Length: 454
Ligand SMILES: *Cc1c(COP(=O)(O)O)cnc(C)c1O
Image (cartoon, rainbow, N blue to C red):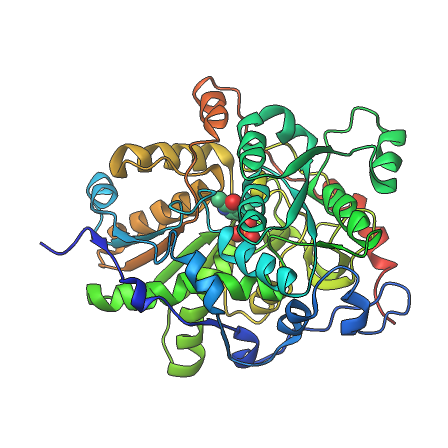
């Protein structure tokens, strides 16, 4: 019987991140300055990011070395295990071979520290004293709090109000790692005060929280801002996941026909997919890559490919991406990490070019899949991760119909131990599916039109 768990030694941990821009047939369009509609230069970004990260953001180098100090901290949880999902295969009675990479062993319980640690490191190197950020469900805030603690940086987190109220344990985790946490919209920033003036009971959104965190960074020379997804350098840091998978599957004597991951901004999907996508582009492999989004926030399958802001107040550069509009307010689904209005520039371009696929799933199907997985494999997945699992089950059932032993790899990007309220609501029948309407889209499209370059 082959192994259930496929481990790597620490000495086998990848020494470089992979930058897919070097191999993309069509390079991503440049981010634009919203005032001039001209490409932004490094100096436009220097008030909010340290130069090392800005250079990574625009780099076309294929591999970028992971600094020793970052590798040392990665070793707290990396390399992460890959598992063969024998239990799920048996439950589904499928000929498909299902593997999953488990990123829930990290300090925050998800893939997010893979980028939080290098981001904190480069800021420390640049003499920065404090980082600000936003967090939705609390995963990213927890990861950055941990990373800042490792490098002696202060950490200020703007947490979307609805999560702040519903998910107090994430806040306590951030406090444990030494961070200050504020419910967003807050009274600490102009962006927050503007929203509260319009709607004093606003439950917040990721877009608003990003605006608050950026405003704080712009207003203080010792403070910079850190983003947990969407940007090129964030996706690149996550490629350590897929590079480990390449080696682990080699040890298992296998190669994926399909790679699946949930997509919020695109970082964990990119992390597991891009090293395999390189094999498609460079070595003629034929793997399919499926990004799974919630049906209530379907930017990839229902959105438009346009320039749009990454935040609500319009502080970020304009990014060429699939978007539902920066003022889109998704229905309150429990997978907080998937409630973002846009998708990363890299994933958007790859989808446009047909190199990756996307599907949108309803949350009841996802929770059902999550419960099946927990019972078969013994790990309770994060609500975000259940979207990937639901797609895996669809593909495994299809493989059964076709009678083919497809190899499926998915990213179990986080555990759900701090998200049990979502499961409780699911068991009590309080969750609903959401059928996205054209009105939801058109309501925000006019303001995007005005942002397009001539
Ligand atoms: C943040 C998060 C996501 C969504 O973000 P991506 O950048 O798309 O990966 C998905 N799953 C978990 C567990 C997360 O914490």
